[in-house]
Image 1 (cartoon, helix red, strand yellow):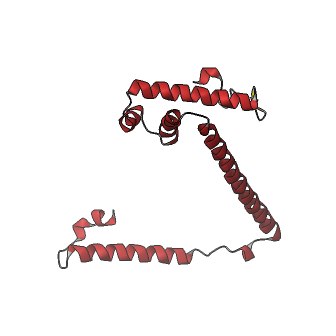
Image 2 (cartoon, helix red, strand yellow):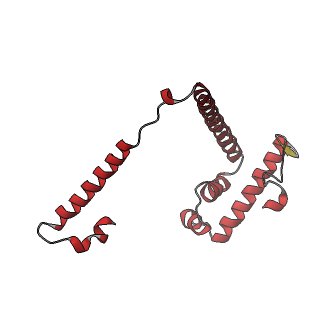
Image 3 (cartoon, rainbow, N blue to C red):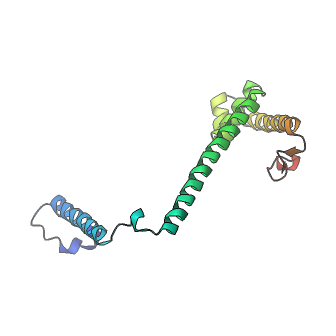
Length: 156
């Protein structure tokens, strides 16, 4: 942007490449100089209360990341086990459409099926998966209502 706005100041004495390099170099040096003027904050500069608060926040964040990763692994394992209950064709349709975000047209091209067959397979596969989950967990999934998770029959 600087080069564009300063294009009128280019005198043509040297190469355009050298002129652009000089602008880029000077811009970077200015950024480095400005950073040196701003002092760095270290934990030694914090009060004991601030350090304690920061430690608590960091440990909570680390714990939450660990729990989130664990939950993702459990959900992925459950999804894999659920997919195993479906026929290979249904599993393929769901994996491509819902897992890989492929369009119905793309799935039809990959499988050689018609687009309507892909839609029907995906619909029926979702229905079978929903029924399997309902058998496993009944009306409530781990204390969470089916509607909140989008698993009620009107959600399809």
